[in-house]
Length: 173
Image (cartoon, rainbow, N blue to C red; front, side, top):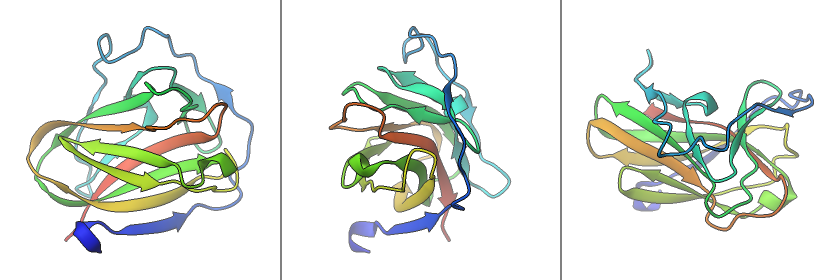
């Protein structure tokens, strides 16, 4: 892939349907008051950045959803989710972003920042807010140690149109 980035799409089963409800999340929860839990390497050498480990800013909240929690609604310019990741070894990883989106998501950019590097993933309509799918980018993590990984939508949209379930860094090679 050009520039060391590859895009792939993985589908989740279509039977992930259920109602959703908001999980209490105080508005004071932001980057200044909540440092979040440290994401550490798992048994497969990857890093699972889940909603419960994220530090949230703006109006972004944790939402209960079929099959697990998600983050949303992503309708303000300052909505952001940040994870502190304890990288054991630098290298190339597949950043697997699992999300659900409505027709409004089609073509919208999701900004992924790892350390001081920024990439954008073009989102798509997955069939609704309970239909989670995974898109991936190959990324380079340049150093070991604690690093922030952040997600935000530079040009947000009104209403609920996107839910983020997780971002997983899976080692390549």
